[in-house]
Image (cartoon, rainbow, N blue to C red; front, side):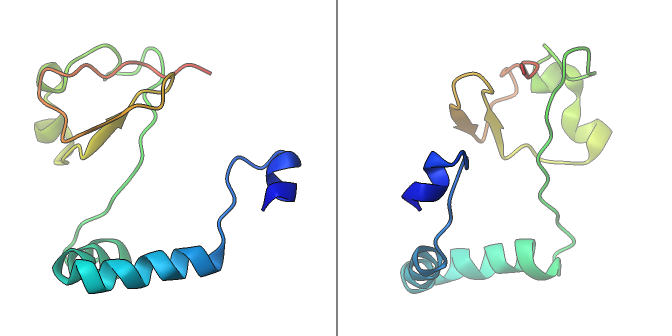
Length: 104
């Protein structure tokens, strides 16, 4: 893992660690695990999760979620907003949180 990171990889995933984390989640939070499996795995609930990058000049850029009427226009729920500069993640963002455009 260290060699890959030194070689320039942004992230290295060890299958053994992912498997161990997954097993722990199944034991500790079986209902959450079942829900996430349905949402992300089979699509049985008719839900999809997407990641959207807000570029400068985009219709969402600089607007709050309320101003953009995001839910009505896209029939979607915003689970989180990630600040592209700091990496800060705001889960379950309020309607007054603005969508700042991404920077390169």
